[in-house]
Image 1: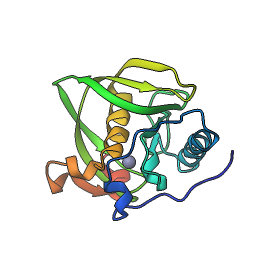
Image 2 (image 1 turned 60 degrees about the vertical axis):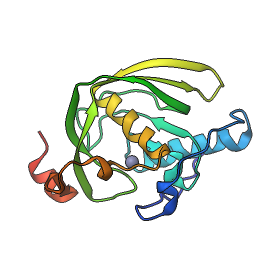
Image 3 (image 1 turned 90 degrees about the vertical axis):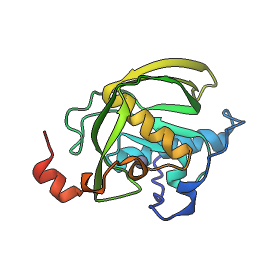
Image 4 (image 1 turned 180 degrees about the horizontal axis):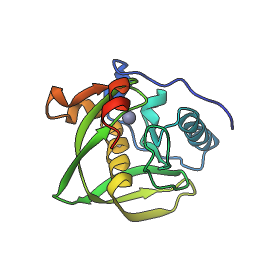
Length: 175
Ligand code: ZN
């Protein structure tokens, strides 16, 4: 339960692969991977994580908004594992906000994201869901979903001047 996995860093090819759908959700291996993803995310003070970030090219992502040092205004929610997720609709109104990534430590960038999205996914018990997310949680879902397509937030930054180090972010951008 308490295993913390090594996080793949930018440059690792696994972060650039299209992740494969999970076929056997109930298998012990899959359930254990989900446990390890949650533990690794919590230990790293992340608000989300995707399986490619621990070297597994599978369509599993965990979303767990909570207030952290990096995201003090985040709403609290229990970690939700989303398996084989699909974004079925997204709002046209896109908001820019700062993002970071456990796989790109020390870097922040302004990323435009849809304010509201509707996602379908299978949970770890094998049940299907369709759910709408808004604002910060919608941002996390879009960020983690990108990881399953081999995309990282830096790919979506529109201008390199909208990138800063974590250190400068802590000084200037915490608003
Ligand atoms: Zn990330």
